Image (cartoon, rainbow, N blue to C red; front, top):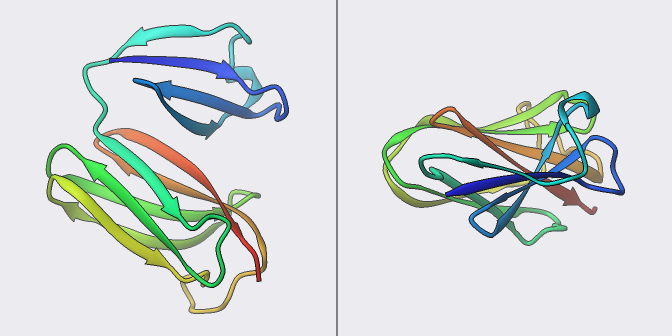
Length: 136
């Protein structure tokens, strides 16, 4: 499996990551993006795939992820300032595809404002992120 990194032209801090043809978005400080050219690194395997539907959403979105072995998975929602909004999961999941809903509320049960949020999944020392758009 190969991972390619490249800098997105419209966002200085957005890094597009291609894993075996699937495109993922990660947000990194500009200093961590070495160039606009692609770099390829071999990795043993991809352990997680992350998606959400619908996106944009109102009032809820279904988040799906697939993992290839039993492992602890943490799914968190952050605002664009990096503040933790909600912890959706922090537990061990068995191998396979899993789904859960986010209802657009924070950990205190309060509805969050319309806007963009980042969904971050940590599994088996790998991190995947996805931009979520809530429209009220």
